[in-house]
Length: 584
Image (cartoon, rainbow, N blue to C red; front, side, top):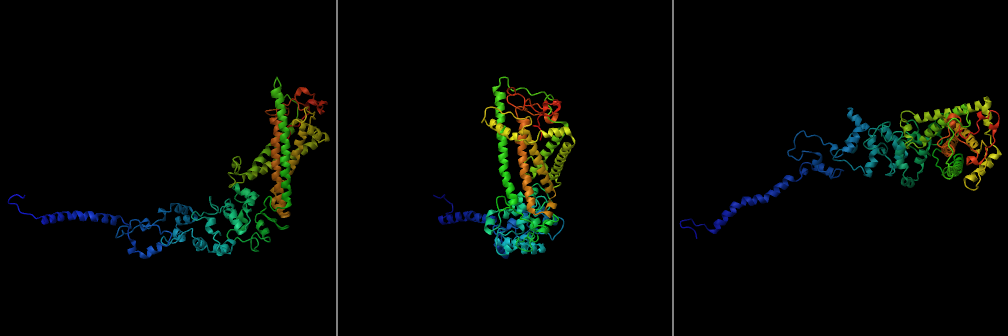
């Protein structure tokens, strides 16, 4: 009940007062979300830039918003003198590659005509997708805006004609030169640098799917890599021929085209750029020859011969020496109560090598090891032991120079050997003991059977046995063959001028496989006789002092057989070498 004297207030009037006082609060609560949404919503550029938005919606940037490129344009009216949008904000990697490229270098040098992002990709509003087939096909025309002459050559090439025919796999400028990091041909890391050309061409010509689809030979990259040009290119040689040296750069034509640099009528001129006179007397034989494929008999038969003789020869050597080592180790280390007889003191053994022979042996051994190292470094340049040789190959042909010097030393030692034999009676008499005899074959057969355990009694062998004779005459044969083929390879220009190229391929085949055979023979046969043979281990010192630590070379164990008579029983026997086991 209202107090007495107070004015009366109706319920309707009370309701109007409450609603009137709360309406501002209700209005604020209802409009606040709308205001917040309006403030956070993206700027509607359509009202002023309708045409630009239509263009962008059809470009590669259709997913990007305007303010991603046009920063601070969200404010309206737009602030004045805003910086021009930069591609680096989204494409930092591509911009960095472009700055390091030849185009970026020109821009940095002040050449305003040098290509920038807009030059190739058009403006940011009309940028096309680079993975689009139409964009790929338009690349030569884009590059041709600055390189008109190159564009004409490309359009006349087999690649340009394929692109014009609608083959999307056909290579364009960017496939060879790169997209953004386009470097000068001689710059490090360039995809068209001499050492990188084969890898660049191999992206297509080494792809079996592409070669099969378009009927292209699939062995071109492999055969080039196995050739001297390919091997030298792997070492970093800058002057050796690569794919572009023969096929050209931009105007690459099929070999059936009379204007092609690799057409049969033009090969003499193409090869003659590096090898004067090549192909002037005889036609140049096929360049890309795959082993096991259709290859001439001049390379097929020698390769098959060595693939048979190398495992057969080295295998027999290994069996012979393995059996010898097992028998000696068993008899001298395990079964003999007193153990192995002590080696003779240094310098107290029998004289086996005269001073001149030791000098020849050292020179021959050093030159041989250097030849093996430098020769196989060309074949296997990626191996760790080859890297010191090929590290400076791009600056100076270190490997080739060392290899040739070592070859000259080996030839000089061989000539000296012949001269000394002709002028020195003492050395000549020693040499006669190494002449082969029919009994050597019998001794070798019986000794081989004994080492394999087929017989229990060790046969008696001559003081200068088949072991030393096989070593000596193998070196004579191998040195002569390697010297002849090596000189022919050194004089390759003369070879190509006077003989068909196929005979140079024959020489390369023989030189390679003979080197493999000689290296394995030294490792398996000779090193066993002077290092791993239990009779002389850890080393026979005859090559240093002339006198060997070998107690007996005739029978095993030493006390079981009498000494074998030899020329050393003659007068002055103490000064006559009795065993040339340690000669190379």
